[in-house]
Length: 193
Image (cartoon, rainbow, N blue to C red):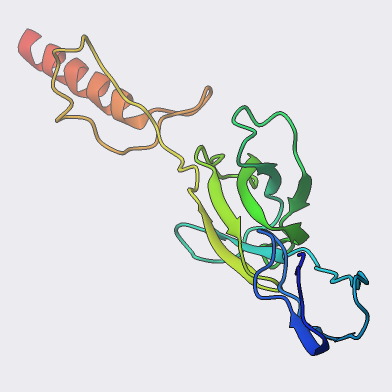
């Protein structure tokens, strides 16, 4: 800042507004204007606003922590996710951390899901605006459920008769079919008598 035509005397100079992304200085400078035409220089140092992103990865079903999820942090302007600024892997407590993140807007994207869970498709936006703040996130993953797809006949058939019985493996003895074959044989023998 430049102050012109300042009269003789003692003054205190304090910053009232910092550049965006920087902390306001609390320093108060004393200036004694006692010579005509003299330039009094002073310097005020601002520090960048720095925050931390702390996430907890949990199961959507059990709400317990998930280990092994991998995340990348990107600038909000990196729309195609080509230039990661950092990486983190969730620990045994499901925790991930990105420290010393400068003022600005970011996107947190899961790049590898924990075993048995789906990869998150949506990214999470985080805005670092306050110095020293910890931005906490709770991030859920959807568990991959075991399921059997059953369909008999064409697409117009009703599946009302489908049960959740175990599908036999190769080599298993199928007792239901054997009982049916014996019943048919008994009926055939009885009708021929």
